[in-house]
Image (cartoon, rainbow, N blue to C red; front, side, top):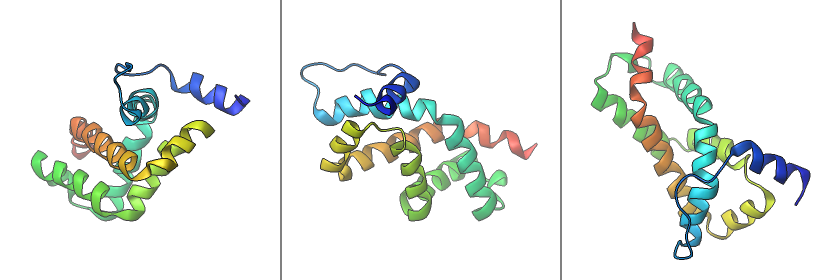
Length: 133
């Protein structure tokens, strides 16, 4: 294992969630790789989404919670440039072996990544309400 890979694994922290012999490769990847990265990068995701709404949704802070949640979902699902930037923030913390797993099943892993990120941002929607005061 290279110095970079060792550093990244230590930097990200422990597996979040259970991984058993019955876990699929995708489930293992999600709990061993994606969840720790999403947790580590959370503040960056919040800042990135705040910047996104500042540039694209000037009236976002006046929206209802339901509308804000819809904007979060829509931004990540439909805005390809924004989604690719978010994917880059996650993939930058893959080891080479993890990247090899990712490229074998990138479509399903991308869906998991974005779904988990949407849920993470939606669960923190109150952080986007604080700015309107």
